[in-house]
Length: 230
Image 1 (cartoon, rainbow, N blue to C red):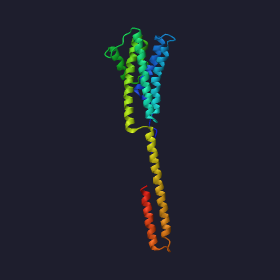
Image 2: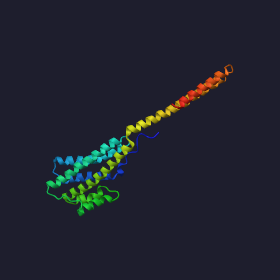
Image 3: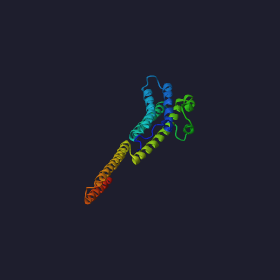
């Protein structure tokens, strides 16, 4: 019988998760260095970054049991990062700083860092901790856009998989159906064996008329056919 719980986890291999770890660490640095102590935005930005990361983790771990839950949690991660994206844009607006366009050479340089293998915060630390708040904001905006693109693709794939294969309820139904079919076949086998033994005993009775034996054989055959068709 196929397992009801599908393979799951391995979120560490997802590029979206790797990005979310970098975003969380960079956001903590940004809040500590460029926002005033007591500013409510610090908690809001930190929680949004954490939510983006943690919901990817939780979604992947829940995927074995429920595709629906995975879709919901990945959607929450996507929404949290969108909220964080707006916070970085708000900082640029309220401080009269420039929002880079997608063709800016600096945007392209940050975007190309996604191609590096074994990426982590240490790879991004030099550009985060040695540049202006304008640079940090734009670097994070670029990275969040990349992450959201990956999450959108992940959600699209999950939705297609759910439509094609269903979720936990469908797997449970099929598993139960298969178990009942297996039990039914076992019952048929046992019933046929019992009929065979009864027939042999009756047929061996020398005092029983031949026509009665023929009737018994016919009855056993008919019951056996009925059981096989169960």
